[in-house]
Image (cartoon, rainbow, N blue to C red):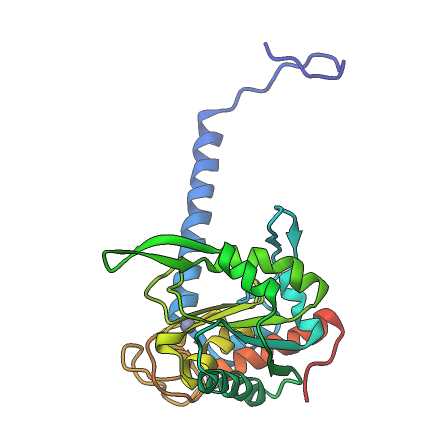
Length: 277
Ligand SMILES: [Zn+2]
């Protein structure tokens, strides 16, 4: 017989009947099934007013407000870069000034289109950022060759201390494949306050697209498959809007604009701070 701890008097445990075991397993399976169906439905269809409300209340911004680990393993809320309202662009050595201008224009265009009052500037590369990059290089196979790749997560962790003393989001123009996804042209995270843009594919379009992710829209326009209430967006496989994964169009779709607008309205409520121009 099992006994309870802490000196309490022993009490016989009630045997679990086969029926209640069956019922609890069934309820659990039904909950999982219901969750899967709800998730599938959310990824397939939505309607514009619900879509906007889900962004305004950050329901679709899952994971955006979690902490990240800094280099020493301590938790850090990198997403709070928003309070400083600053985005700084730096280029690693070997990136031409014209490319920096291209990136600056793309980032500014997105900030302006949403109507946010954020300061965007291109600045010389601080030694601390250069050092963090050097230490975030990892050797990886790229197209059958061992190459230096830049770890996005490693760099975000190493920049955490810098971001804590000088809060901002960092946009970095680099000449390395990204270790976590070496085929990616760029990578961005609101939650990690970081954007990487790769030299070989750097363009106004890429900078504007990744800034959409930096500003909190961590989706692509392919999902949900359909959001009813917007003008016909074409079939998901034929869409070409800024926030499609392989798009070429520089225009933000109404769904992405509403998502970003709702996300920042939610941030104003969350932080009691004004972000609109
Ligand atoms: Zn993307």
